[in-house]
Length: 144
Image (tube, rainbow, N blue to C red):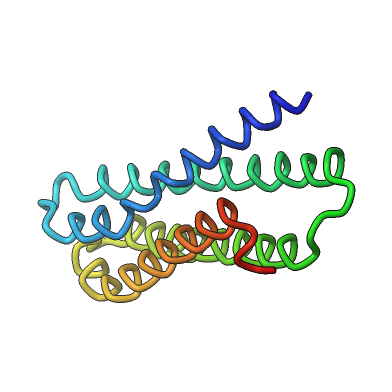
């Protein structure tokens, strides 16, 4: 059972790690021509959906590995990782909401120009949260 949980956890982590490219994907969206803007936004939305699924799998597989295979899990590590994963999920949701509003508007390029700074800020915050989670999960002794 442990090898299966570890496999799911690692695959989900790699998928979530691909999110480190999101700030540059958002930046590229600004220069996309009008006719392919909606396609680009759809791509980023599906990317976000995949990120949510990987986040859920990370939370479930990591939680099961801690509960089943760890005799005395570090409370600090569990709390910090839980809060970090919640922050990642929140930033993903905020990005997805803004992109949905842009896609559903009558003039998506104008709304993208208006919301670009917020989208960029959220994507960079997501970048740093994922980076923080990566460092904490691979080096849990930092918290001790």
